[in-house]
Structures are given as C-alpha cells and as structure tokens.
Amino acid sequence: MVEDYNFFKDCYNYIEDEQYSLTYEFDSDYTYRCSKLEDWEQYHTDLCIKFKKLINFIMLKIKTREFYNDQTYIPYMNYWLNYHVGQHKNSKFTAEEFYDIIEKRDPAFFAYNFKINAHNINESDLKDMNSLYELYNVYYEIMTMDPSITDGCITKANKCFSLYKNLILTCPPGVDKNFCKALLKFRDAYNTLKTETECLNKELSELPSYDQVISLSQELATDREKTPEQVQSVGGETISSTSTELSPEKNKMIGFAGSIVGSSTVLFSIYLVKTF
Image (cartoon, rainbow, N blue to C red):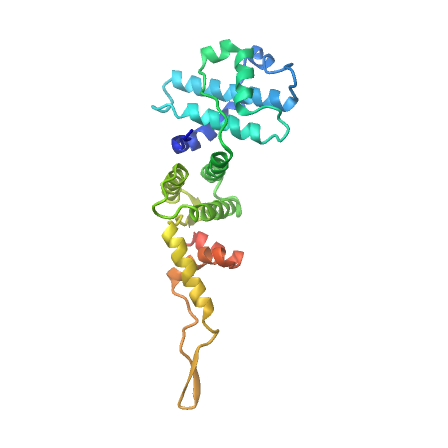
C-alpha cells in the first residue's frame, strides 16, 4: 500500500504531545492491562503504557478542542508504533500484532479514546519516515532549548543540516515521492523557524534546495581543480592570476558544499551559522 506522509506536517506537535504525556497521570487499570501477557517482556509493557498515554493525551486535546482539524494523529500513531516496535530487535511482534494484542486486552480503552488502522509499514518507507522523524526531533529540540546554552543550539542546527543535506540529494527535481514532498515541507518549516530562533545571537541559516546543493558542490570542485596559484610572467615578475579571497557570500556557502566533497567540519560550520 502507498503510505501517507502527510502527518509529518504536524509531527512537531505530536513530539510535544508525547513529552507532555510522559508526565501524565494514568489510570492504574489501563496500566495493569499492559502487563502479564504471554511472551511479554518489560519493554512491551513500557511501550504499551507509553502508547496508551499518548493516545489518551491526544484524545483529551480533541475533546477540549485544543487539537488539529484533520485526523493526522491516526496515521502518526501507526508510524509511532512501527518506529518503537522496530527499535527493539527482539520484540517478537510486529507493530500490527502488538496493536492487536493490546486492543483485545483492553477494548474499553480504545472504545473510549480512538482506534487506529494498525499495519506494518514496509522497510523502505519506514526508513524514510524514520529520517523525517529524526529531523523533526532535532527541530523540536532547537525550538524548545535555551538559545543561550553554549554551543547547544548550534550543535543541533549542525546536526539538522547534515541530516537534511544527505536526504535532499535523494530528491532531485521531478521525483514524485511522498517522502520528498514531506522533506520539502520540513525545509519550509525549518526555514520559517530560523527567522524566529537565534543561537547565541546568531541567525540559523536556511536549508538549501537540491539545485543549490549540486551547484555549490560543483563550484567547490572547480575551485579545487585550480592550482594553488595560477601564475603568469609579466615583465619578469611572477603574479597570481587568481584571487585567493572568497566573496563573503561564497564563504558562507562553501562550508555546506565542502561537506559534500569532503571539506572540514570547520568550513561546514561557517555556512551553518551566519553572524549578524
């Protein structure tokens, strides 16, 4: 089946909901029904409780009208379950099997809250979704952290940039993949965030397009093909025909391009954060 990536537009909100739900007081009866099941390990019990807490928290927001208009929370919860079940190599259950077990064990909970269309996401889509999920988690950390923390915000921005750079190269213009559409939506969200968030009084740099990445890498490759000093003899003197100075704009961008063809981390950081 074709997986829907549309829920990622609300992923930041769901990550925030999960953080709140972890501190949420939960009915002991719901907790009890997550334990003492056949072939069940502590990991499964913990995951069951976290899953129920998040569903219950989302349901409370829906009832108080503090939630979103569409129903992206249903495919999101299916992805969330696939992700967390997949984190445990010896889980013994697929995401679909896990959901069937806990729903049958506690039908009243799901009747009171909501059910999801639980199914196993194929390996390729799950890998792409996990990459987007990682990006949004870093986005959430940048959004919520204290910008005055030494290097913390910048480190997160560098990580986000590096992850994005590797992913955008798999999405050349004309590729009609749901993953690529979701990645471009993330880029838009991040580039909006960068105007609202500062790291140590420095503005976050924009995430580039596929064409910008390719163009910059080609520029840097061309520059590297030149000799350190292209010289010519004029009146018995040797002069350089190529300026060794880079334009300010190119100097900001070269770090990103350099990371593609093996430039140093220092140069990479030059592009990631531009000072006022």
